Amino acid sequence: MWQLSALRSTGIRLAIDDFGTGHSSLSYLQRLPIDVVKIDRSFIKELGTGRKPKSLVNSMITLSHELGYRVVGEGVETADVAELLRELGCDEAQGYLFAKPMGPAEFERWLSTPKGISHRIAS
Image (cartoon, rainbow, N blue to C red; front, side):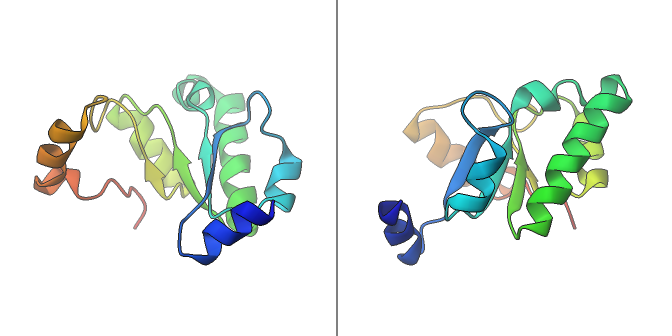
């Protein structure tokens, strides 16, 4: 854990990836020196399908914000899901709606375009 704290002290932002699945437990939110929680795409893709998925994502966003973390929604594929995340207060989003996976050269070209600069979804 001291290694993570040392990295963070240099200005590197740390994130919990795929939050809500596998080995990412609530205890990590309390113990690890993180800055960002990335909500797993399995929750995001279900977002528009009913009350339960929306409640879960909303709870994850609220909890993360209460603990002082920024929140990223992973796996955003539609504008409707991006809008729901924005309404729930999610800070950022990533997924095929914005760009497909790409190599370094293609990423540099994409990043130099106006749409590649930022994908923050909250005001």
